[in-house]
Length: 430
Ligand code: F3S
Image (cartoon, rainbow, N blue to C red):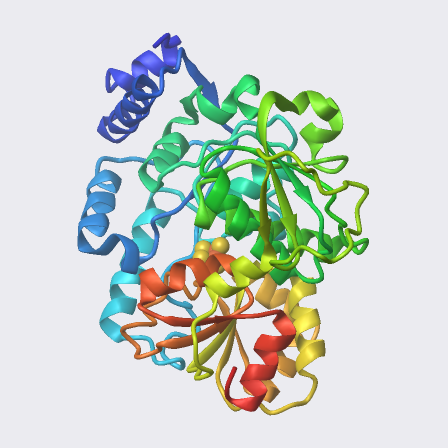
């Protein structure tokens, strides 16, 4: 790989052992993926923060690295951890787990990583521009940054994002290169997406089919309200990254690269997928795209995804919203839906500490807490130790969470809209 003088010096250890190790990680990645050189990155989002995910080996690895005088050189911030730093005692999180988690956060802070502890950094003012090269690692954040913002990042692992933060660069391959950002699949959406849960169902289906390809969506009726649109796009990207490994999508006439390049963003040999609302596909399309008769086209329905994400029964221990982390507008909407009902089952809404403070200042937290609900910061239902806490039956409006919870928490999951989930918390069953 071609290195400039500074990169060579980093590799030779002239800036310390910690940065040498970081550069070695980046070099190894670059060699594997055939990068010709490095590209400067302007920010790094570091996943692999939860003690549930990285355990003692991860903590030791980070401590060892921090002890080699490794300090970040660009703005770097943390993905959610396994606890809410303010509420963990109140909510009954295990003490031993919490102490280990705090150690991980402290080590990363020592390296200069900001304890934002969120997967939606764009809700707290961290908004990369179109064409900006970054090194982010949480899959839904990666998807949002690439697709909606038009920034350029591969789906980094925790160590490679940290290495990029330390060196301020990453090997130039994959989605850093324009030619690798073309759509491999055309997805014709022939049904109306009524809620953010429907965006999640669409994402679940497309992720399953497209794997690590790049979909180009046509026919999506997007909400006019900007905040609802953002929530839908977040849900779509998060689900595609969970059921598949999609790190970038385009939407006709909406996402920056689709707007800039139009049809040229789609590869000539792209596969076509059609999405309908129900299995019999009889519902009239709200779009201008007629059902294609081609035998090569694959037709899938949102109902398939709904069935796949829902377990039988109606028992719930917990209702959880906020995957990806909720924005202030989402919290407002949730407060409006709950009204002054009294909840029979716990309702946890995941967000960032900054958004929670904004919500507190505008009286939303008080409204939610009066009903028995809680807004959690710094953590989420997938990376918190829910299984250890005896929580098994979980309702969620997130297709990403519904995809991960059975494997990560041995949970029995119910998936529904935000309204259905809140109703379940009010009634005590799904
Ligand atoms: Fe974020 Fe946790 Fe969901 S990290 S995207 S809330 S699984």
